[in-house]
Length: 175
Ligand SMILES: NC(=O)c1ccc[n+]([C@@H]2O[C@H](COP(=O)([O-])OP(=O)(O)OC[C@H]3O[C@@H](n4cnc5c(N)ncnc54)[C@H](OP(=O)(O)O)[C@@H]3O)[C@@H](O)[C@H]2O)c1
Image (tube, rainbow, N blue to C red; front, side):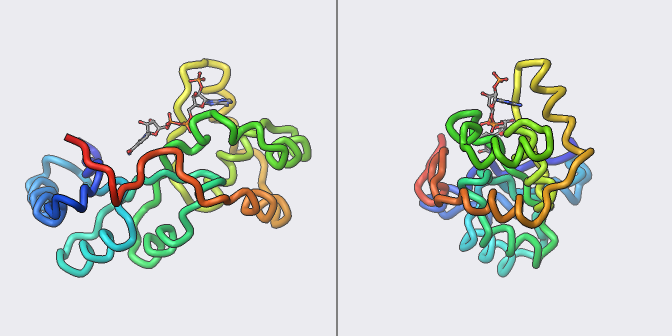
């Protein structure tokens, strides 16, 4: 397989280092081309980096303009870990109705979703928007022909309200 991720750190079980060492064996054997993690918080990532030699290729995390994850993106940048955004459009809920996105989109002739996807790309994120609607899937690909300027980026940065849509990885257990 191309990329194999630990889905959640489940810190209350204290077993993610053991699992990561097994992932390292899987990578070494060639069964996965790359291995990484998902939903790892700064403390879990720092511990993994301090106590095991293999650096994750990617950390897939909840990330959108209302929850831009600056601290984790900084850690990723320092260690060469790719940032992959899940729910990058805020699950298509209230985020895309924000007037800031409408205003920036009108300036460039683009939709709010295209502004958000372009913002991700300019931050250096890998972005995986989900849509079952063919016209939206086409729209979501069409984000390479324009650029957000410093004012646009500052406006989108102002949308940060520190709120998650999904579970807190420090508390979430999955069986
Ligand atoms: N690692 C993890 O723990 C984790 C957790 C959650 C999600 N994920 C992954 O993240 C990916 C995407 O996340 P997500 O599905 O939660 O949220 P998302 O991609 O942020 O949003 C999907 C929603 O946005 C709508 N949408 C898509 N494009 C649009 C557009 N151009 N204009 C308006 N609305 C649009 C979709 O509607 P329609 O489909 O009706 O078009 C859908 O309701 C999925 O592949 C998922 O597997 C990973």
